[in-house]
Image (cartoon, rainbow, N blue to C red):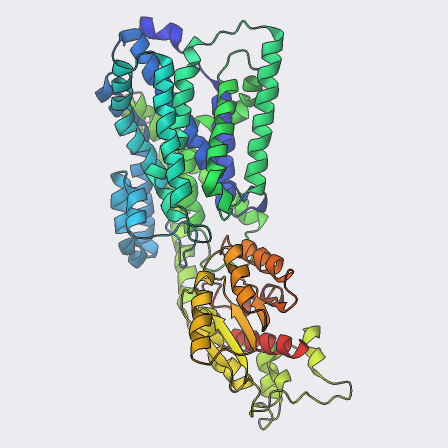
Length: 611
């Protein structure tokens, strides 16, 4: 394509860079677990629509000028733009893991290989790796699934566009064909998603996410940026700005109010997001739009031009610097420190890798840098910082791998201070003296209740749960002899009905049932209501959860919401009882130390007594 022919049609779109900036910022905020951006994962959906529009717009412009599209040149431009920065990031992350955690690097070899070949999303699907409900350290390259979807699109789409232009040269027919494919993709997501289950399959799938890209592509056919003129009537300009502002407001509300566990998100939410985004794009690419100039302000365009760099680097920084167990969120200083590192790495990647390679000036750029007076001091400073960070990681890992010191918490001190002969019968030994609620177990005359006598205390009581229940098994049986405990690692709320039916068939289902489920992910409230309906003649207790995972608040809100509708259901608020008690948890921030297990068991017994 000649420069003379191409130049008049090309136009910089500052508003699009502004939208890119907003999208990448909310994705970063989401991965930093900031509450106001609980729907920040929608930023990836915005990027999909943007990619569909911009790439199709570019292909159609080339077809308009030259009457053909060089698919090979298109592929090479895409690879030069995307692959070098990603490879650089993968190499640096691999070196970091090799230095700090070689076993983890070995376990992630499949993730690295699949990312290089842009099939990471399908690798995660076939290996059933959840994006939402996984324990243990997260993969520092777990964000590359979205780049795989985009690269698969870049590989196939130019060919499909050429076929479409040959057999459906009229724009109307081409738009209908594209929207038809988008509808099939959106239906695939809605039909394949099973409410109350892990949505990772439909979240990762190229087939179930393609509609966002296709909707953007359809807009490019109907509303090509290179055909739009600046001369419009004042009413048209005002209408564009009003529609664009409303669309942007809706987008921000979705980011603030939505979360990844909203069932509606996979039924029609992502489709709605794509429609809102495409409306925003239509306004921002129009040269008459004042909103485009507002979003095209220098700070946002600066970030927007580097949005790919920021996306590539932000997740490895957040994950590699993330403590293995964080019951509380990151502090402001920790967040700012991570943001500084993300921006620095992104700027270096953009200035010294991405742009020089894209413009064919890589050797010249690095020759200039190598002979610059400040290059060697900069390298020395960078190596010093790297050594510092590696040393800090070693120290952290060494501290985490040390055997847990016997650092007694208050509940353990109480045990030691009591008469040994009474510890098996005195419930207060397992309560935190600082917890006023624990003192309710005492009668007004100072005598202890005798409900923990080892005769028939736990008879008629059933505890159903997951690995947390397994942690407290021996302690709850010590406090409530005769209780039936059924715990299993990884158990979800969706399996509760099956467990209840099995226990009922064996005659082991008590009249008082404690359900401790939700640590492993969200559940369908309708199914929980169905379970509770079958247990209307029982006294039930639902236990809230404390897990340093995104689904924690969603689970707890769901439990409380459902419990409010049933007079025979009580809430045992473990989340509140364990607040500011990090010593109760093991390194993963979920499972319990022996002291934590005793304290957990004491909370269950306390609530059973109160109710």
